[in-house]
Image 1 (cartoon, helix red, strand yellow):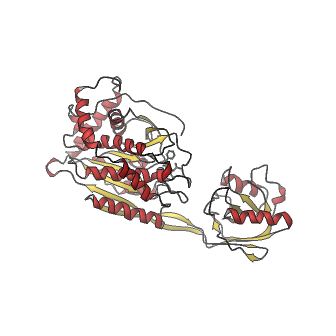
Image 2: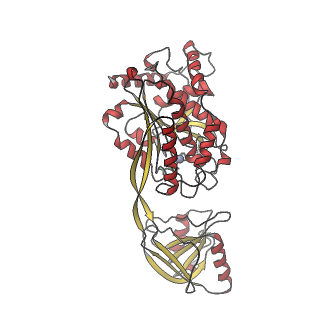
Length: 457
Ligand code: BES
Ligand code: ZN
């Protein structure tokens, strides 16, 4: 029976996709007015303050997968879900990380006292050679003078790949890179396959002091990277499940997700503490709302390492679960003050049940939401298993994306609230007990016309 219900639901979704005429500007049909009443009661429970406060709590420091920052976030999210009354599972998985081993530097035979970070990917080696300062290491900056030497490079303007390649092409045997203006620490850098020289990063102050020394004398440096290599690290998905009302179970499952990990050196207020807060808020208000559908609220780990958590979760779904999962909603970067409009992205650029419901919910809550084509987040593994899925995100992106400046002060309470309302209204449309909604015209979402948007991100 569940299988049949899913098929009918998807068929109704397709009908919505091809309905070309009704627009937001049209007078609401009677069934849409009924929708408004349902939505209003439900989405009024969404609190902008709660949404904002959770982003505040989560974005105090980075949550890179496999670090204590992630584990603290996981504990917090699990405790929140449980406080709303959910049975909550931590789903561990491993991913491959790079361990920088024991890097060290000596300068004129004296041990360098600052922190050293390895950013070489595939070499353990020790080199000793004169140090040569090459500025930002653009192709104009780098001359044959670096041949046989260790290149001292300032971070910024061009990619790590180009910097390392430019000095390698001129015969450098090692790299010391220091941080760019205004940036703290030394946890940065990346070499690519074929760039097999020892490369390490130091902070800006130490780098500038070396530049200074080089102005008056020759400096002999030794750069050593030992015991570096791939290691397995553990990350977690956090999954809260609600069971439908006993006598009204329609066999269907809806999943709502965000990723709780951030990049290494950013607090990820928008990417993606915002989405996590949205997932928690919907979980909180759905906990007290009767449904006929199983809801699974989840936050993924290691998204920034290659969608590892969501691929893991999707791989654990049985064929039966896949066939019963009617929709996956992914909230990623839903609260930036400085980004553009809300867009729903699908990996293949086609509409599906999720975008139909999102566009229609948008029209009821604020305005019609357009759709576009993009992967790059946790909707992809769901899509690849054949589950209708979409990413809810604002485009174009804010300038703080993946930077240490992705902080709470850039978060708009209004954007957080409106996006959560739209996703919530769409989820509620499917989950409320008057459903299977799409088999019943009285509660079917009013079809809206919504368009493909191919703006650059
Ligand atoms: N939140 C972003 C997704 C994103 C970024 C969407 C930019 C649209 C534009 C996500 O956390 C991310 O950064 N994803 C990675 C991809 C992943 C496979 C490592 C990315 O886009 O680089
Ligand atoms: Zn993200």
